[in-house]
Length: 205
Image (tube, rainbow, N blue to C red; front, side, top):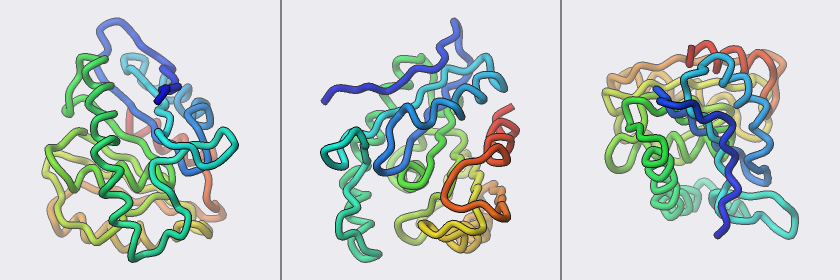
């Protein structure tokens, strides 16, 4: 597999690592505009837009797991199968940056958000902060690592992954002891606008 992930910023003596994970059918390049705004907010951070490992079809799109025939029943198994490679990818970029979980933020949009959220449910903690954009957990939350902050950002009009997923899981995470913020943006569908970008950079600043 050829990794065409995009290193948007790599300062000397980076103090933080920010990894961005795109949605299904997209690619690393699609999150570069958001990554560039993050660089301005955190000039001390190494910022990488990570390319998905699998093609979605004959085009240039990539994915973390196949959504062909995906259902509520089979999604957890597909995510579980994809998680080892996803977590290995995080570890590889941490090794490249010389930074560990205490200095790592995962930002995932849609399917990338699913993977970033579910990564907190399996194995050792790999990040200090997870920012899920139009994301969701693949199955009910099992744990809330005490050293992970969750920022859930969702469009109120999202027709792909309903905002209800974020609305429902935020209090569950809080009850489990996690630090959680929830932002539901009126008029936003399944996408990223400047309001989302401002929230993301604000949480990172």
